[in-house]
Length: 152
Image (spheres, helix red, strand yellow):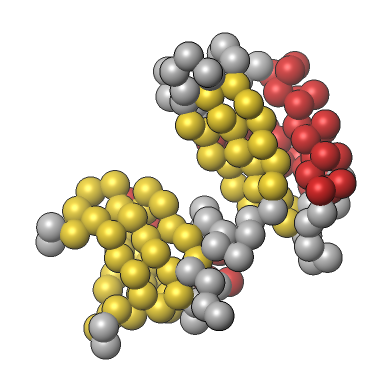
């Protein structure tokens, strides 16, 4: 059974917010024998420390134990988004406009699923990037994964 990270995120967000953190996103990877992996990404204006992750992990574990949205064994991981942060929400695509991104779509557009370019933001329901001096418009609902590419 595939778990819905959006529903899990909605369940966890009030508790995370009450601790003073922002829920950036949730990923779930179902596993075989070893169980699945639930990743919860948090952020704050002051950044995220290991102690912050521990506090949120304790809070999230309690909610997950009561609500039990994932059958069977799984590992919970709470972390900061990092420099190569994943972009989950439309507001993330607006916030990080100007940054370099990698985007993978669920289905190919003109034979291509992977794109890399400068994020221009959202236009309607589409994510817009500049790639090789051309603008590419990608349907937000087809974005399987989007991540910032750190520039040094």
